[in-house]
Amino acid sequence: EESMDVDGTTLIVPPSTNLAQLQSMVDIAEEGTTLDLKGATIQMDGVELAGGCLLVSRGIRLYNGALLLPPRCSVDVAHRGCELTLSEVNIRFDSLGVSVPAIVVRKGAHLRLEDCCIEGGSAGDAVQILGVGSSMRARSCQISSSSGGAAVSALAGGHATMIDCSMQGLVGLEAANAGSKICARQCTMDGSTGSVEGTGVAISDGATGDLEGCTMYMERCRGLHVSGRGTKVTAKNCVMSKCGWSNIGVYDSATLVLEDCTCNSSITACGLEVHGKGTRLHAVNTVANSNKEFNVSVAGGAAAHLVDCTINSAGTYGL
View 1 (cartoon, helix red, strand yellow):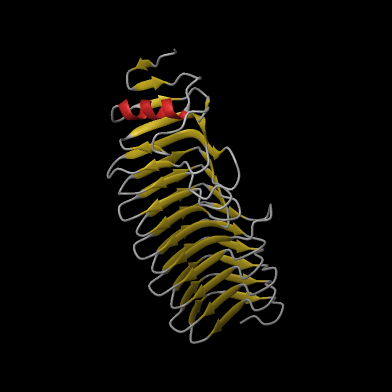
View 2 (cartoon, rainbow, N blue to C red):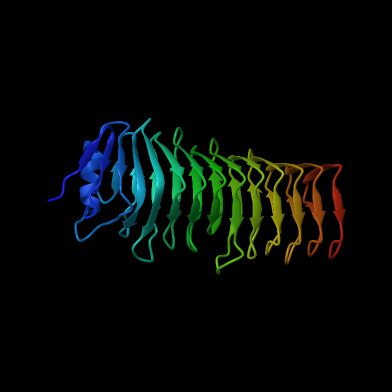
């Protein structure tokens, strides 16, 4: 039987390792240990995980390899204060029809992703951040789900920070419930390929969002969807373009602040919809141009405050 080589705080994972053996290595690794997969793909290989998931309860780093997960098996980061770091790691499921997240972070744990590719199943989120104190930070990653979930979902007080990442799914980035928050910098939500009818970013039910330098091209749905009392989103230097429905939709007493943004060329509906009593839009130096119907539509008791904005070339009306 091959053994682990120990080099300081790095454990070299043998290429014949399966997921159950990797779980044993995770369980005995000391805080701060790096498990180097050496480019190997770790899979179940006929041996079931005792807990049904790869459970991480201390701060470790997985590096340079891939995890091929069986159905109903997630990477579960679930110990308050612990941080799992994944560097140059790819994670996907070995079959279709999976409804659990590829990675779930809960109970106040933390996740850090660097140069990773995470693929969710056909019906669930790829990465789910659940609960107050739980968080993730991702840089230079590609994260996707299929037709039934979000690429990244922050729920019930979870926080997610994305930098220079690409997301694709039924929703690219999602935050729901009071206390939940999404921060995104230089990220892309692209639904221009495949058959997924999705939304680039969806913030709802009292959650908050802070977007800067992001692009959203969603040929089958909205680029940015903001809804619910107490929900507030700020977007700066973002482009929402060529979306199948409205490029931006703000509803049900939510608030959206736009600065130096572009909202153009919606395929079927308005460029920017602001609908419902108590719903608010504040836009500065923003362009709404060449959308299919109204460039900006304000209805149902909503209010919009536009400063130094450009609104022209609409299919029906500008404003």
